[in-house]
Structure formats: structure tokens, C-alpha cells
Length: 243
Image (cartoon, rainbow, N blue to C red; front, side, top):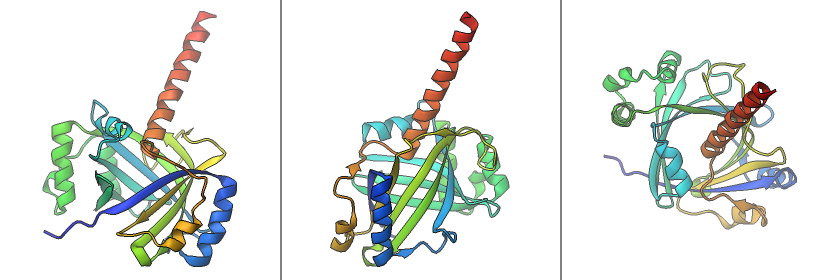
């Protein structure tokens, strides 16, 4: 069995003026992600899964040192299928695995049908099927955002700026899916990922007054945003009935 390579991941909330300056600095020493569009950005949309008890959500909020969660991710217009991904954490290390999915397979998972994973030739898919059956995994929330990515070979560094983080419930492939803003309009998410070490040059580029995220994540933010919208909609409904 090949040895797992765990990566380090730092997350920050920063303001847009800080991001504008950081973007210029990063562009001078790092190259843009090859998959980005002409403007240096690309759209990311993920459907996260959790069990009936919201275990993945609770483990993230509580900051447990060992945890994992599953998602299906598509990029851009998503005509080319999707990826089944599992993100695992062990202490400070992050390990990601992925398996290819067709559009129809991704839609089956959206509907709660994971039977096809059982006989897959991809180990991750079979492991996901076991978790699906034993834990009762089901779709929890769609997370949508725009990403800019910069890479540096030294230290295997990848820095991303994620903006317009939104939450929804429905299909990954629904271009008109109603979405709720999950992050304030004045902030975005900075993620710094690296293997083994983070070069000093990159450390010096990071905003000194950035606020590091601890238990928070886009998944948690989007779950909370949807929950807040449901509470608000319910309050409005009962207010209207009382009139």
C-alpha cells in the first residue's frame, strides 16, 4: 500500500483590500493554477454528505483531531462529470482522495442511490459505499464559490482565495439553484496548503493581521447559512399567519 502524504492546511478570513494586495504579491513569485480561466478564477461547487446525526458537522465544530467527510465536486459548467472526494484529518495533517464519477453517477448520489459504488474498480468508491450503508449518509448542503489559486513547487505550496461562498440544497447541475450567502460581503477565505514546509518567502506574503479560522469551514458556514434561512423563513411564515 502506498504511503499517505499528509498536507498542512491553514485557513484565514481576510478583507478584500488585503486580498487585492496579496494577489499582486503572490502573482510576482507564484504561478496561476493551470485550470483557471482567463481571469485567473474558476467556479467550484460541491455537494457534501453527512449522516442523520450531522456527525461530520459536529466533529468539525468540535475540532476533533481525527475526522473525515465525503463530497461530490464539479468545476465550472461541469459537463465533464464529477469527482467523489474524501477529506481526512489526522491531527494537523490533511489527506484527500478522489475517484471519478460520471454525471449520471453523481446524480444518483444526489438522489441517495449509492449501490453502484459497491462494485466499483476504485477503492475509494467501495469504501464510500460501506460508510454510506453503515452511517446512512445523505446529501446535506451544496457549497458554491469562486476560486483563485496560486502554486509554488517548493514545499508543494498551493494558496487559494475563495470568494462569493454560497449555500444551497438541490442538484449540483442546477444552474438556477437558489443560493444563500454564507460569508459577509466584506470578507473572503484564504487557504494555504503545503507539504512538509512553508517557504519563508510565502510566510512573509501573508497578511499579518489575518484572522485564522479554527473550527470554521465552508461546509460549516454553509450549513449554518441554510439553517439561518430556514429559521427566518419559518418566522416570516408564522408572522404572516398571525396577521
